[in-house]
Length: 420
Image (tube, rainbow, N blue to C red; front, top):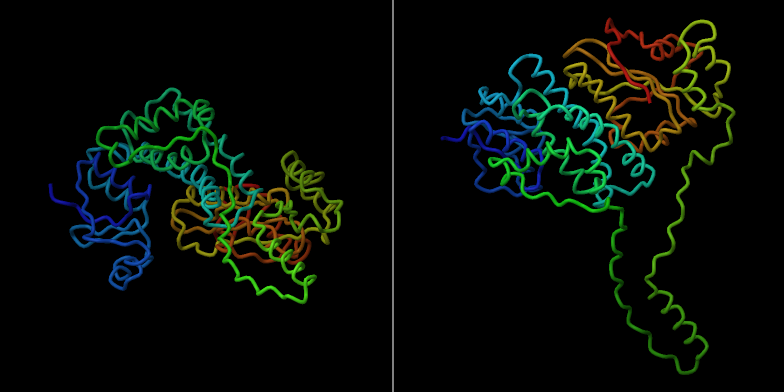
């Protein structure tokens, strides 16, 4: 069979393997570039002329059609083999396939990635973020496991792209964070994973999984070896000075790292406030938002404007938003990545508008007066605009509507939202 196109990826990229797996199940052949060196070839003008992002996976069809972004390529390849049913066989199944893919990527992969980035020294280690992300995992794992307790596959009676996403996402978890005891706690999810990874057509594509007996923990990078300094010639008439120099050299050669000081978050140094975020979150959850004795009334009676601040939050790139449920999942993923700062913030953010014509907006209540000090634990925080609100004055209507989930902007009405 002739190739349907050329796929640029690497042999360790899980999203590239998912595309290859989809092609294999669809009976399609994917070609490879004659040569490709990552971080070099993808920066060349001829590559960027086809794939403006410079990212892989990247795909060029035999008809010259080009795509980048792994999910888009995977869906396109599945669509080339409609009889395989990889995208579902009915509109309902297709929607469910998208649902589970989005759930795996925003609730599992988005939680795992910051951990593995810190474990591999791709980003600075931040212990609260590491611990918070690990604590987030059990809930989505249980949701997936419970769903699979009475099903062979996530959707329908055949393998779909959602199941292949289990194969590409969970390998990162099983090789870094989920040990044997935890694997055994979610047997139905693990059964599906092994089914996908051991499938005769897919086993060679995926390669072996390096399961762990205990979750990997952060290990600081090894300190580079110090260059030996040439010893100064011994001063004959200054024995005391020589002795001092020898002591200095001994101290310099001592490579034992000092005990790591316990990092204290700068926000913990702020003056104590009488406003409790936990009390506010309980009031918001248990009371009606508006009206007498409502959550807003509680807020105005108790808020400490010196110790806390209120901010409007807007996603900078609304033109990138498509389906509203996927945009809402994006908010959930952002909130997950803010887990390390949860005790310093409250958020009410929603999707306004309709499919392919929407925006993300809402409010944050943050400790202190600097939003960056709270939100920069999330790697994608700069994708959002932050503007301090006059919550009791000019911006009161916006503030209250965002909390009540009836916010409307430029004719776009609130569709769905999340709180953190």
